[in-house]
Image (tube, rainbow, N blue to C red; front, side):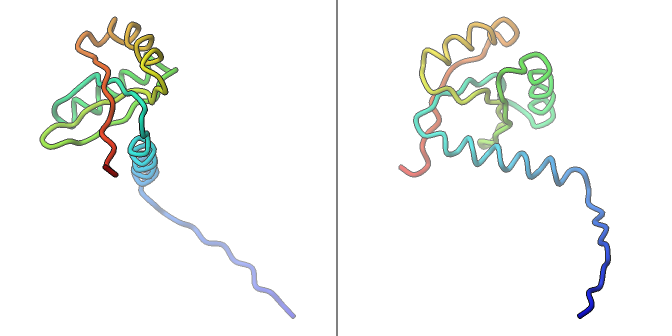
Length: 110
């Protein structure tokens, strides 16, 4: 028996990895069930992405995602198990994002 050896080079746009990570984050956030989130921004896409980037550099302890709910893009932070956890985070986050608030995402299965 003989085997052939070869190599494959895949040229793909780096944005694909970013898109896959965004999809993974969205799937995680949609399955959050009874968890709490903090919203820090609602508006256009460019500002939402800029807000997320700024937030990520200042608050490394919390994950953030950009979500689209017609007609706005929203920046959501965290995935807190209890309201108390969310309240503690909100105190810190409100120092930079005064209009931030806690909410409980709607479960899409209902």
